[in-house]
Length: 349
Picture 1 (cartoon, rainbow, N blue to C red):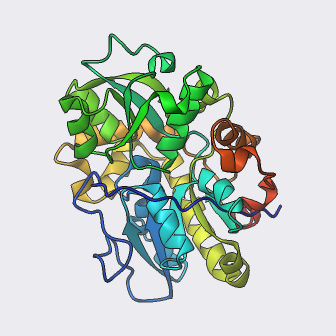
Picture 2: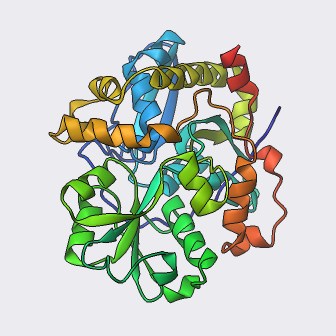
C-alpha cells in the first residue's frame, strides 16, 4: 500500500527545549545532538525535541547501533518543536523529520508532498496539565474559555490538539489564549508562575510536573484508550516523515531507515522502561533516572510495535484538523498520499 503527503510550515516562536542537548536546524546554526560515525550513506534527520519520550525511537535506534547495522550514517539534529523540524525538512536542510503525522495533511493543502514512512505511535502521547492554582477552575476543556493554555509553539501539534479539544467542548478558538512555552523547564516555570493556567506537554515534562506538584492531569492521551476518549479514535502522532520525491528517488536508503526503526520499536516492546532508560544519554534523565524510567513507562503504550499506520488513524487526524483548521476544513485531502506502509511491511518481512 502506497501513501504520501505534507503539513504546514507555520511560524514558530523561539523556544527552549527540555535539555541542553537541543541543537539547531543546521550545522552552521548549532551542533548536532548525535552525529553519525562517518561511515555509510549520510542521512540528516531533524527531531522535534530529541529528549522528548514521544520521539524516543530516534535516539534509541542510534544508541542500539541499528542505523550503523544498516550501513547508514545518521545524524540526528534537534529543534524544540515539531513544526520547526517540519520547516527544516521542507526547506531541504534535512532528509527526514521525526514529528507528528498531522503535519503531512496540512502541507498537502499547500501543494507540498510529504509522507510518513514509519509510524512510531497510535496515540498522541500528550497530556493536558492544569496548574495547581487553576485546578479548581478547570475541570474539563469546557472551562478553557478565558484561560491561557500552554503549547510548545504556534502551529505545533500541541496547538492543533488544544484547539480541537476546545472546539469539541464548545469553546471557540478565539475564546482562549495559546501561549508558546516550549517543554521542560520553560513549561514548568510558566505553570508555576501563572503565565499559563493549563498546557499540553509530554514526558518527561509530565513526570517532572507531577513530581513537583506543580500541576494535575486533566486529560491523558498517552494510551490508545486515552486517545479514543479524548479524540474519538486512534491518533497516529510521532513518525518519521519525508518528502515524497526524496522517498521515491532514494528507496534503498528509506528501506534501511525503516528496517532500523522497526527493529527499534520491536526492541522497545520487549524491554522494560528501566532497560530503555539505561540505553539513553545520561543527560536525558536530568539527574533522576527513576523518574525518567517512570516517564518512559507511562508513555510506552503510545508506541506501535511494527511502524504500521493504525487502521482509521488518518481519518481521526483529518477529523480533528477539520474541526478548526480552515485550510483543511475546506480542502479535499487525499489521505492515501500522507503515508506509506511499503517500507515497514518489507521491514517486518
